[in-house]
Amino acid sequence: MTSITILTSASRVRQWSKNLLVFAAAIFSREQSFDIWWSCGLACLSFCFISSSIYLLNDILDLDADRNHPIKRFRPIASGKFSIKTAVILSMGWCVASLLLAWSVNWGVVGSIVLYGFVQLGYCFGLKRQPLIDLFCIASGFLLRAIAGVAAASGTWSPWFLLTVGLLALFLAVEKRKAELRTALDRGVITRKVLLRYSLPLLQRLESIVASSSFMAYALWSAGPALNGAETSWMLLSIPFVLAGIFRYQLLSDPEESERRFQDSPDKTTEKPEEILLNDRGIQLTLIGWLITTTSVNLLDRFGMLP
Image (cartoon, rainbow, N blue to C red; front, side, top):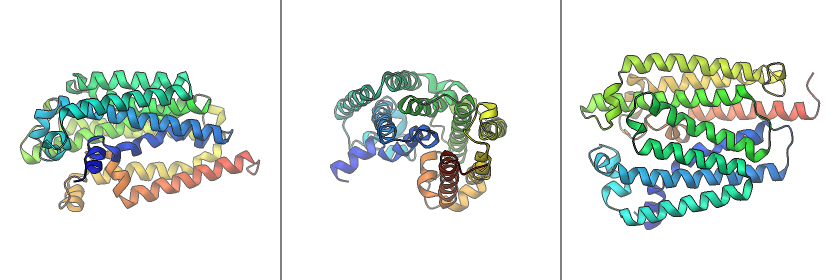
């Protein structure tokens, strides 16, 4: 591996795709301008940097556990390809760069970045070992990205939209823990202490509750301004794509389906939600369909072409 490859791997650059959620506010903003997209771009990059900083710190703290993990032992820090001293310096550099970028946008983005950093630090130093609380910590990261996007775009706050983001993030967190627990049970090795407090039946019940709640929250948001939601009720046309995405993700997290599809590539399971976005064609097509539908509805509504 080259130095650049090791650096990007240690910084988890592949997981930067999560931060595209910041642009949601720009996509749904009634006012469109270069400044809005530029501000959201800076906010997105700021989250990329702060998340890399946290990932490096977490890998340092979890060094011993990662070395005993069947997959994580190949990470640059755990494998010894990236020194702890270099990781600390790089983590601090990412953090400073993130705060400077956030400050160049506005104080709302700075607040989101700082709060994200504190929550994730709490997660790294112990909250990740607390059942249920760990799920909310993971979900809060996505919610704060959405809030930062709203702050960057100087947009209005839709409670249904933020609730949808929070619930979908909680759904991904539950799926992540379910995949980790299933992998641990299959291999007979528990790599996270918090997994000892979970069971597959419990996580499956949580999955059903959160998935249903996520869909209902999105449906209420897409119903339009009458419910303080989207700008137009024509956004209801995007519901099938959201439902298809939830169904597809649950299919991929099914033990038999996961084994069938990824038996030759154990790193490509729903233990890593961002890998699904990058690798699964079904999820990609669903996301593209959703983006085309929502963008088209927004444009048609903006130009007064919808009844």
